[in-house]
Image (cartoon, rainbow, N blue to C red; front, side, top):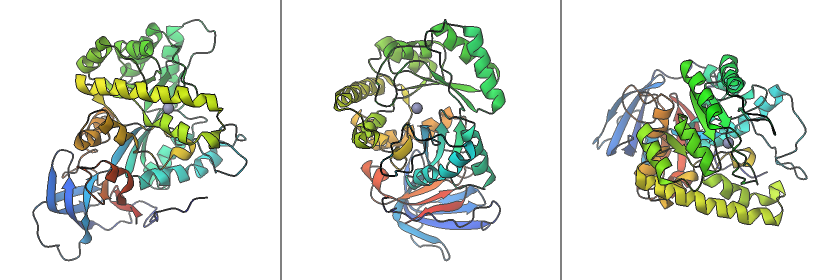
Length: 403
Ligand SMILES: [Zn+2]
């Protein structure tokens, strides 16, 4: 077991025990649009009450964070936080013995802690079994479990092998998920996962459209997974709110995304993780070149999407031992041509808008939720500092990570 670099501070697990007001003093603060210097942040309960820049003196009683730059709590738009592996020698992440849902929820707190340590205070969890994601979401919201705020999809919708397309049945599946407790509907529109980069589309345009229409009628959004170009194209045409993964997107699809405001979550880094974790998973050597080839194509498509002006969201697609690496995707965003500020927007303002939380999450401003991350270094100049420099994290006004 690796030694944890951070101490998770369990100052107050239960809601309602935080001090009424906390005053924080930062050397710099990026509010989601601008970088400010010498900033006093007043936090009242779970919210930011005031932000006051240009204060050369630290107010008496303030928490001294002047060596750091504050950024908004980050949002990871694609996780599977209930995919838990205890890293026991001789075992692998896949093929572990089946656990009861309550046991999984308890153990997955470890993934939640590692996620907070990266500065991620909100996740969109896109696929779980046995309602374990609903349970975690509710426990975190109650203050009974320490973890990122969760928007969840429950079990993803997929087509059975060899089944005939059935849009009405797909629409019913979407309605059933929402009734059961899903915030989002997740659709597996193609093959491809783990060591497989197979791009075959498995859900038709008509089925995607039926799912999107059913979910939207109930006021819920849809995320469609597609490894290949045809599935991405159909997902966008069908009105998906976000599309996950994808390569070889044509100009027409990129233009359609821009026109509709579709958010594309390329998840480039998750295949980097699979390559790095090949021994843990026991992939065969011939699984590696296709993963690397997919990474290159995924990055190339993201470069073209950035140029075209597509809205891009940060999603790690973290599973098992990838928790704690949630923000490494940001480095790929910069490689794809973004500035560090644009890369941060993929995990703040753009992500908050996709979650319909643009007035409470993704920015540091009065009235916004007090999710604040203190970063050592110069995050607006070097995105790597966000990945390795998180020193302190506040969520909902409570300190949850402290170096
Ligand atoms: Zn996924």
